[in-house]
Length: 209
Ligand SMILES: *[C@@H]1O[C@H](CO)[C@@H](O)[C@H](O)[C@H]1NC(C)=O
Ligand SMILES: *[C@@H]1O[C@H](CO)[C@@H](O)[C@H](O)[C@H]1NC(C)=O
Ligand SMILES: CC(=O)N[C@H]1CO[C@H](CO)[C@@H](O)[C@@H]1O
Image (cartoon, rainbow, N blue to C red):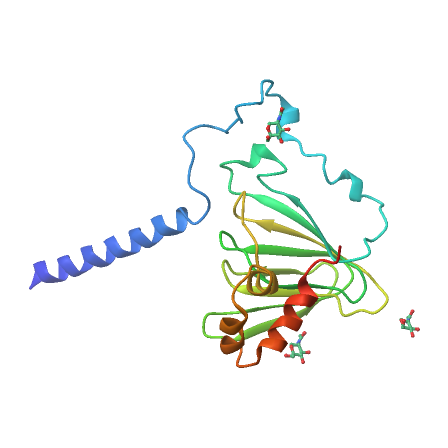
């Protein structure tokens, strides 16, 4: 009897330590060096760890449409293996960042200016939405569909998003579904509509030349 209880305790300990290990590995895979230097980089000094690509945003006019400026693995190679990255999101009045997913990370959004309607949908299809004021922070859990919308007709909004991956990845729902060549009939059946409606959606998302 005593040994049975001991075994149960041991088992639950094992389960909980497994859960801790799972949490500790929630970011990108660990690397076996302090940092990773790309093969074509010959000089590693402080400049390698500095990204100046967002300086141009300081004091700049708002863009004409919603704009994302990233500092992730691609733009800033020193992030490789460090499990962190940033994006600056600029929302002119009335613009939206359409529903999308980051498959490899949660997103921690900090609203620097303006107001922003944000929301995500969990795996039970429950919507969690909020209207953020300047200075607020919102977290979008990893892998869930989410969006942002600047509902203000006159004022632009700007936010900084941090990610727990050097390469969080983005799956845009409209783009993924309607610009990648998925057959019209499949989409029409999936959305319980007709082919003409699907073609109209596709046409609206095709970049104008
Ligand atoms: C190294 O290669 C990458 C990708 O081709 C390029 O973007 C980068 O400018 C190169 N860096 C140097 C220092 O040549
Ligand atoms: C949440 O979304 C609903 C529409 O689904 C909207 O009426 C409501 O104002 C939103 N709430 C916030 C706090 O933005
Ligand atoms: C406060 C303010 O500037 N409001 C304006 C916002 O934009 C609408 C439509 O463009 C105007 O009618 C408001 O006067």
